[in-house]
Image (cartoon, rainbow, N blue to C red; front, side, top):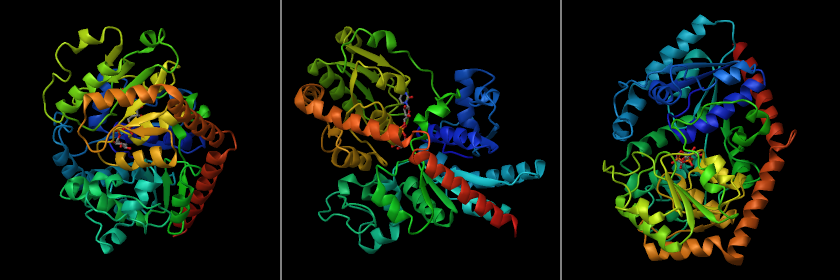
Length: 466
Ligand code: UDX
């Protein structure tokens, strides 16, 4: 199994590995060496995310592979260059790795499980006669749009222009969607980026995958998933992260050390605290942080705010306004990283001001916490649309990227109090209940997973006959 080297992809991959292993499959989980290096700094020399799960009886081996760049190369700072190497040099290293593994343990029947964002799996799968399973870690909506890239082109909607008036209303299984909600890499502004090129190649490559897994629930996106099934076998296996049976295994998925917020939260009244985080990956500007900081102060609400290293799009390390630490006086807690699930499930937390990364969205839903949405890039604008319009457990912070402190303060106050807020919380609770139902023993997730296992076996049997 090879995930993308980012927290938002690693998290669902790790739980998928646990699920497969709990079904008796021997898993080799491969981290890029750069990711392993981060784990080493956090966990020490024994950094292996699965060492405890292995002690509990799961057959999960752990391996590392180079992405073709030296370890000291700053991959966050030179994102485009990093991706250039991932596309150009990494496939040959994977090829070598897979070949070596199959030679050293020839008695296994193998299949390949990779992140849909990678364009190279079909070549490797075909060379080694492997069943090719692709794992899309995001929503079915954000899969369906680039999957129909040719339709976007035919309709003159690629690249998609922000000022476009008409809606995209011809993607099978997808409700009409406005340009502002479309993923950044399909837009005019993102067109020249390496992500756009990589996504075009990857969404073309996935068409030859044998089976496609999605980190979403059938109950959340039934029409889109059903339309996708007309083309290829798709399975909604989300949200594995919350499966109780998998939580009996301890894994190390977080790439950063987590600050404990429990002591600080314990004296706050129920639903009074706003949790603010923009995930593990996207950058923002100093101006956005400044308006947010003052907006939070003006709102008067208590907050926990994750300000991670490298969060700004410039290399300025002074992220917060001068004197902010003194100004918040027990009303706010700023941390470099935390255990997000533990914060969201704390009864004191009543709302999540989020960039709408898909993991964060699922986690907010699972904890029954309404969201204020401030999407920054990638799939986040599309996730906002789902949160606000389809699932109705969130509100929009603002249109566009620029923020105003007074507007933020008003929005936050309204969001955390009154009937409106109660309504959002009820919607969030309904989603939580739906998720719990999906995850019940013999619930729809188990049934879908069993079907996937059956189909995988049939595909593997067919391969070994030739
Ligand atoms: C990226 C993309 O930006 C996102 O849009 C896409 O859906 C997945 O890949 P990221 O930006 O990191 O992910 O956001 P998200 O998907 O929300 O994942 C962040 C993960 O980091 C979550 O699982 C969250 O629990 C975790 N996290 C975040 C922490 O554990 N601690 C923190 O302090 C902040």
